[in-house]
Image (cartoon, rainbow, N blue to C red; front, side, top):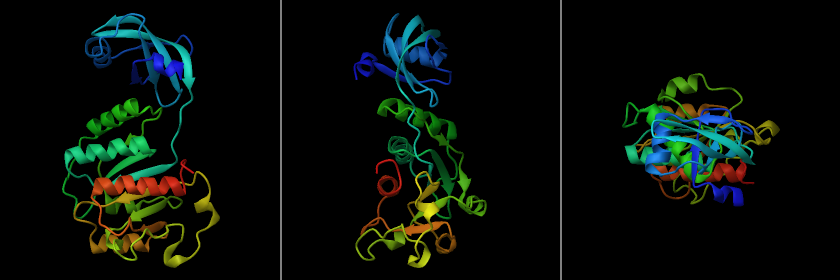
Length: 259
């Protein structure tokens, strides 16, 4: 706890971390540390790279155009999230940012924007969303940054869907049917799932639809997939960003590292 409090700033770096390891800073990183945060020589910064855990580093050279940090103390190992993908249809910019941010905080390993029949946005800035994921990990104390993939068409993604990866299909058409959240621990038609699906670490994905919902052909195709488990998220239809948080919570409690 003391070590964590000794660092004023957390920073994600794409560089190996280890005892006495020097870490060069990019111009943007140096500007943030020395111009924005006004750190100087010998200041402490918490570093992580998604592989080597978190380290406390000392500012050995401060320059607004560059700089060097030196790793001094190991704080904690990397916490790799469960093998969970979050698939979602992009919506308005701020709400798409919110979904990426919450996916990082709540433990998704990969974030995949998908284009569905009713997706409002036909393009995204993958680099901007990836940078937003980095910022979210820095701010929430995470030690892992999930990949944010390029926008992919849902039908193409489903055509190449991995055989062993289960898919939690969040169907807004289930809202109000029974007033609760149906179990997704059952297979299609209520059949029991195999032991491999319930095994710790089994690969999964969550699919959240667009503001206009899924089309009937999409819904039929998803329901027919042997890997898919159809889930309703309660008695009310949720906004896409709210549904992402609710689905991540439900999955983490049932299969993830919240158990």
